[in-house]
Image 1: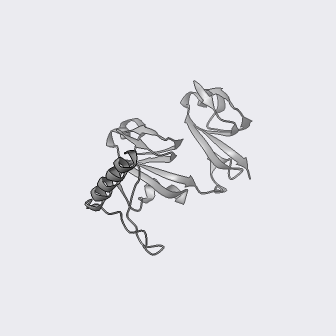
Image 2 (image 1 turned 90 degrees about the horizontal axis):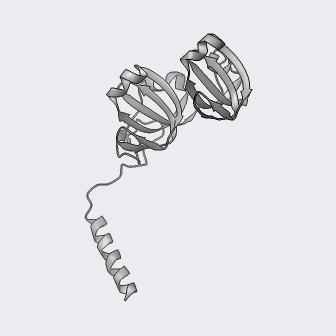
Image 3 (image 1 turned 180 degrees about the vertical axis):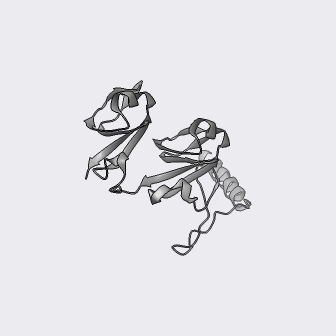
Length: 182
């Protein structure tokens, strides 16, 4: 009896899928061709991100894009938020990734390009690689100034929350926590 119920359910499921008119976008576009993909988490169409959402080509593989114009009031016209997720944001589940806000949208990237530019103060001018986290703490400017290569610290509690172990660099008003010394 259970076997025939399963067979009936499977038949119904196959018929329902066969009548579905939505088809996924083709995955056979030539390399380098402008691509439009559909984000698995939201169903939103992904295209090429504007340059403002990927400064200096720091990020790879766009995972999600979603509009959140109301976030400009909190984050400004541009914000490299760092790694976040997965979790709910703007009414939907969002993936884990490197989050960049370029008003009016958020761009979530799979990874950050390894290696830092030699003139990037957030990585101590190329000394560190593998960004783990960014943390905004404007009040630390009074203690650490505009720039401080603090070095290895953590894990521990800081700024009211648990923080990871890493190499910490302060570029006012943001801490950058790195995984590796280059």
